[in-house]
Image 1 (tube, helix red, strand yellow):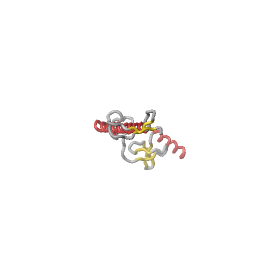
Image 2 (cartoon, rainbow, N blue to C red):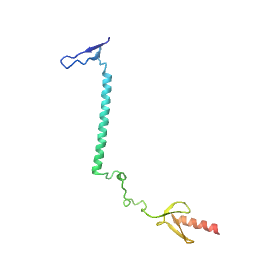
Image 3 (cartoon, rainbow, N blue to C red):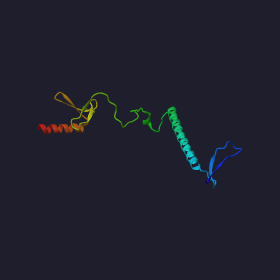
Image 4 (cartoon, one colour):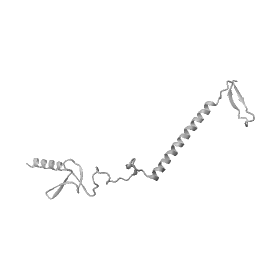
Length: 135
């Protein structure tokens, strides 16, 4: 009983909008929610377009400078702190248990067998242990 149905003449067909007697819209809260949801959808769309545009620009101009590892290919020549890449067999250091390349290891020939060590320290510890066992 506290609502009026208004029909606007001259501005198009009658929509049957409902207004309260005090002049406020009964559907204004629902309209604001719909408008807010549309703004969020628009914001999401703009963010996705922006992200896609950034990917296209990166693919055209390449990933230069900012993050060299993101390109997928690594250059061992540019990184002086990494050890050189070695291909071949590996052997286990009998002292520390580390696997070492047979090409770069410290070697000891004993009884016709070659024993490989990761460092000269492990070789010295091995010889010291052998001397204690045999002596």
